[in-house]
Length: 264
Image (cartoon, rainbow, N blue to C red; front, top):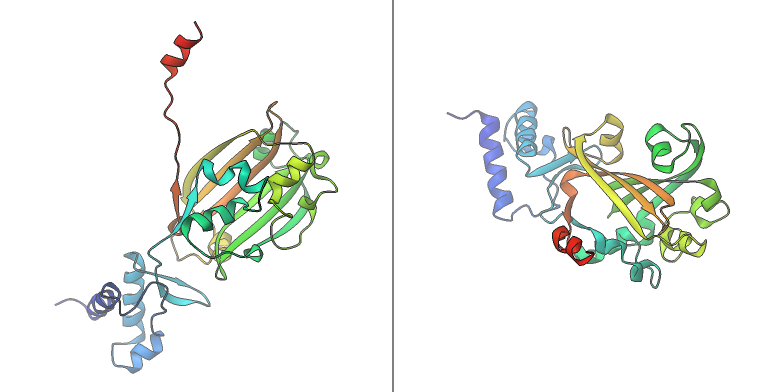
């Protein structure tokens, strides 16, 4: 015979699968199930932990246990940086992702702090600066419906951004078109960038900030943004809740052999 907590977990899982509990719905409080005779507090807690381990629900302090959304945000690849979006319009990168995902967005979904800090080694290396050199750190927290999705901290040389909206901590993107438009207006048009991604365990601070279920990994992004002459104008580090995004990349397949033949 299966243990009581397993029986309860299977019962709740069936209700989730048949739509009785829809994505985003909160499951009953533990005390309510105890009062309904579904088992002891430890039994219900074990059932909820099993559902979380199986990826059916997510739990966080202050939000309870909710059915995991079935459609994570689409995080675009190169398309999110299309100059027509931010130079000619007002579709900054996180908003481009929301539009592609068919999701609502508000500029206030992004909040930030801005500080002049000593460049840590990875930032100094990216910018070609000595470790500890002063850089501006623009740290953003992005939310959807009040729930954090990711953080992104951009590091800039002071001479590139001093006196621009990029050092203004007001909520939302840095004016129309966001940070890339600010750099463009300052004479630093972005031309190419490199992104590096890797998965890792979340830190206790990230688990709290992103309201992650216990044990959920994060995807860390390193983005180096350059002008046509190779000047690095931004180095950014993003931390994304792994279950809240799908990563979508489209690109032309290279043919280096043919390109070499063309130059001979």
